[in-house]
Amino acid sequence: MVSNYPDWVLKYKGTNREIRHIKGHYYVYHVKNTWDRERKRHRKVTERYIGKITPDSLVEPKHKLLMRRMEQISVKEYGASQLMMEVSQDIREALKSSFPEWREMFVFACMRAINVTTIKNLEFHYHESYLSEEMSGVSTYPRHIGEMLRSIGMDRTATMSFLKTFLRNQDTWL
Image 1 (tube, one colour):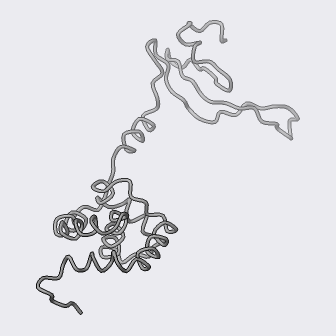
Image 2: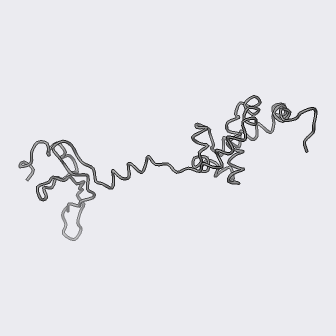
Image 3: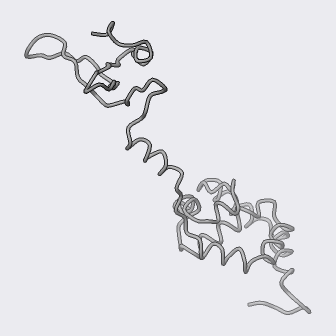
């Protein structure tokens, strides 16, 4: 009976919640009423366990606490992304001086080199790599990358100034 529960237990009683007293402990569950066609009346269905009620607080189930801790864990590819960052300082500087969208260009080039990926999968590979930590906030949506590649292709002046930064003594590249 609800009225026999202490006040610190009753504060967790709410809509679609049921409090149960089992072996000296209080637990709260989420419940709902469904229509039973055979019996022609409503039937209470317990949907999920919400937690254990203590005088201090509501203690969530162990699996929810574990899942919350697991959400903070991140597994990302590190080696190839870090290698790209280390060996490409001069390329990043040249891109920065030639193109306003240099970060997107660098990420696109790295992801294509590391994963040999299509534009539509670029966003997935970017978020799974350490490059997303080093260069955060880069837009890797396929539409944005496509527009960026079109604008770079039409800007011959910026492309030539970028490539000339790597030529020394009027050498030519093939």
